Length: 230
Image (cartoon, rainbow, N blue to C red; front, side, top):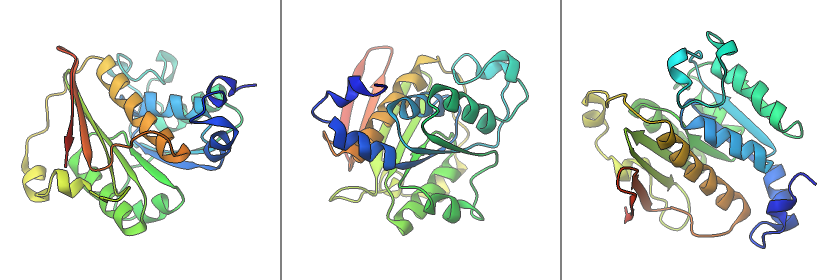
């Protein structure tokens, strides 16, 4: 059976696998972070995945965005990713949305899903995801990377109901900041995105300690990892 190796885990079991099949998860951005997030959630059997991304595959992506191939250069990532994930697991539903999450479509898109996962790379989209998730009562699994460093948190979930605005309360100041350096090694989003995917599985199946009200960070140069309270 496809899912035997995780069903035998007491934290998952048949009941958890049924919850995964029934779950609907929206991934905003299927680039460096979104690639491992999407692959591992599809592999685990999350029943419905939504993919939002307005970008096209380029040669500079392939160093870290392992969902794609050289044959797909110039094609929409959301469309290519949907085909790749369906090829990985034909039992799930994958909805592709080759466009940008915006104020005009965010409420409608997010309303169709149980959990939103952050694979994007800009503050504007993160504040938008956060605010709509708060309004609709949806968990927001956040992740960000820069160079050799990554961080993950879970917002609007659990007793604390901490949000992205608790981590970065001054939106105007954040939006004025210059874009972070684009340099990154491929394993930074691989590790950070995998942690995000793990948090999604924990939320769906109800095991472990979710990073709600906490911020996990890692520096791959030293393997120093910390968990901070928000």
